[in-house]
Image (cartoon, rainbow, N blue to C red):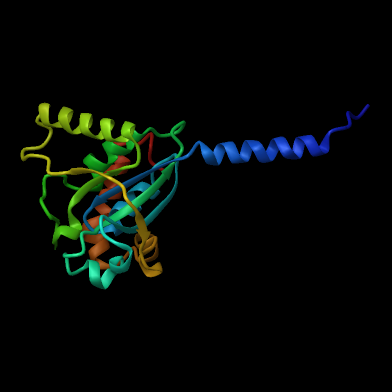
Length: 201
């Protein structure tokens, strides 16, 4: 005998509630560490990350444009907004990826071939908990002498994130053979796969 569902409306509502809860459970992290193309690509390959968007943080809305940010005097840093499921990947793990793979946290106002304050290393925290975890992580890395030079990463409250222009989004996936990507960003994905195989997708 086939069992009939006598509460289709209830099931539909419960399904919608479950979907909303899943979305609500996601958290947001914002990182800056050099050109956003590579940072974006790294986090797009981390399991548990549902979205990575390139953009600008640290300045005002009227200067959140690539041509202006590139001057280095807007207060903005090229940043990446990461939405993630903490049940699949923790904020601590994202920080590990950020410090180990996504960029060099000891380079002041530069990253590789790119120079200027717009390429500075910043963790833009979205909660007091994120701030504490970020500060504790930097203290631990410093105490362990993980890097030969001092960590210069700033830990700053996120005021606003402004998505970058469309042609900057998902740049590595769309331009895998562009020389800058080949030399500067593809190695980051290789290191992500090597150092964090369980997180890599």
